[in-house]
Image 1 (tube, one colour):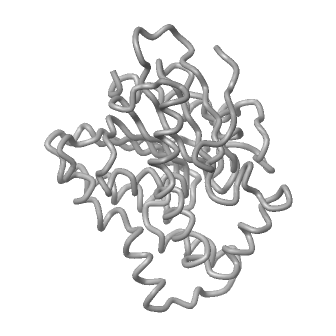
Image 2: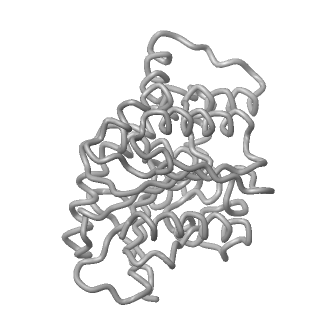
Length: 277
């Protein structure tokens, strides 16, 4: 397998892994957004979930204020935003920025690496899963398949998790409620299913993940299955002993793949091989 390629594309940090097997013509591409929990950078997510069995480029994009965009080499600025205003300073702007900067980053990477964007899959973990869902719901970019790991399906649930960690209630107001409505992908499931070609979606849910996130994954799968022409194109896989993260803290630098992450990697690889061909 070729060495990882790193850099920035339209200002977005990335780690790209070349296809590990020979591909005739331009290879498909898998684009992935990492968690804010470990692994919390593009390079660390590429190491935790390399998807080497997928005959495609695997491109991992950095979330705002993460990886090469960290302030003072750490995640303190992200934590400060979550503590200050979990919805309006953290969840909403992070997802919105990552989704907005994606088209330009994709165009730059396609020109540089030569992959085939007509055969593209999206992958996301936790808050990165909300970015992938936003790409699916806006329907502007063709996607062949999607896979989500412990995804942030409903922003309100993420805020609820932060409330629990901070042990104080979040001060909801009209602006925050409107932002949370925009990032409720169960409510927006009709936008995802309205794609001209419905995208096969796999949700991988850790059985030790936050219970509210597991419930949201169940709800999204049920909603999409009810709207898909082929309900089997939406699947939910539970992974015993998987909590929320896929790597050990601090999760900023690449680290050897954990056995539990290998289980997730195998599930997503099988799904993408099946649906990306």
